[in-house]
Length: 457
Ligand SMILES: Cc1cc2nc3c(=O)[nH]c(=O)nc-3n(C[C@H](O)[C@H](O)[C@H](O)COP(=O)(O)OP(=O)(O)OC[C@H]3O[C@@H](n4cnc5c(N)ncnc54)[C@H](O)[C@@H]3O)c2cc1C
Image (cartoon, rainbow, N blue to C red; front, side, top):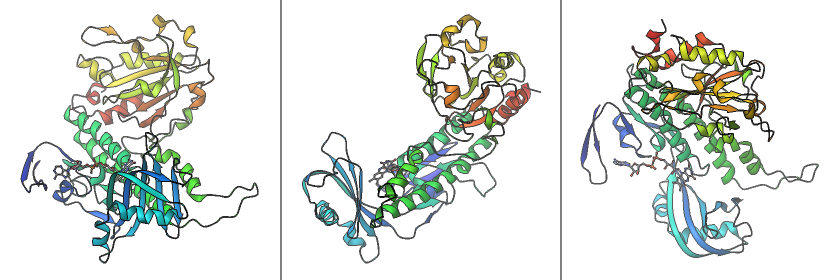
């Protein structure tokens, strides 16, 4: 890519020569404009006064996250860290050609004045404004997140974050989703640049992230409308509880706002879920859901999901069957079969776990397991010093009652194999003896000429 961008701040042009370019340059992205992508969505902006203040108030819920909805306007109040600071989002309404200048000129005093009208009969007396800004935003999404969609060629320029999607700040999701865009793209770019995967992999960035951004915009539209609407008195239920649609909506969408509800649909990167019943608690296409386990080598209770770092490797979590027969056969096959996905690394003289990190989880208590009896795959010799990695094998925690097989619905009789992508999303759930599917799956992911595609045949 040879691209020239106007830097904007000092009106100088910058020429970038690179194999790939990622524009993380915010809502007014020049990279987006340069590749001819457009935002579509709301035609008008909505304005918000946002301020972090130190204030005296008789409003009783000042230390609670509060949505205040009245016919005089609405406020979202968020207590900040430290015990005194308060963030206020004050709704300033739609921006029109008639009020644009007035809204843009608003300062802290005017915003607090509006806040006081909304808070009436309570009052807020500002002692110090730490930060204040008026921002205008609309729910918009780019027509594509790269320069290739609809152009029948491989993508080379990508946009991520606010450059692709804009929405209100009230769902608290903009940064979260933006970082997940970059995480989704990052491991794919690394795999392509290190020749582990075909550049075709990069087309999955737009395919996976644009629907997620659309979900965010839809969520934000509903959530903003709820927060801006004056709250109407509701009748108590039979139990005497007054229903609060805002709280209910927030609780209902708790997993979404925690960033763990995204689900990628079936694609070359995400399996069909035909064996989902073997591990119902690891939905295919969703984030790998951690649970506590006992690390066998040191009997320490750890979170299985936290044992993995964001290092670009794929992961196979092998949950042992009751007899451990299938589990041992799988370990032997992965270690020795020419069609095994780690054959690629072995053929190159790299560590067994250089591209694919295999972890084993047994049903037996950790103290019943003799370390030396574990399959060699789970005690690999790695690194320049040829040391043994003792941290690949785990056992279910049977002491505290938080047994991972129960928590995640793993089939005890048959066990299960969970394939996890480098960005921690479950690519598929397979039986422990699904050797051909395992080969095929990794042929798709690592399909460079020197990859396992050739070794397997
Ligand atoms: C008031 C407010 C509160 C928010 N609260 C939350 C929250 O609680 N949780 C949450 O998840 N999100 C929140 N967000 C949203 C979040 O801030 C954004 O979604 C996030 O910052 C987007 O990150 P980004 O890197 O895509 O863009 P930005 O953060 O906008 O970064 C873009 C960068 O590119 C630089 N840049 C732009 N053009 C050029 C150029 N031509 N040359 C060189 N550099 C350039 C900019 O200077 C900037 O540093 C909030 C937003 C606002 C406005």
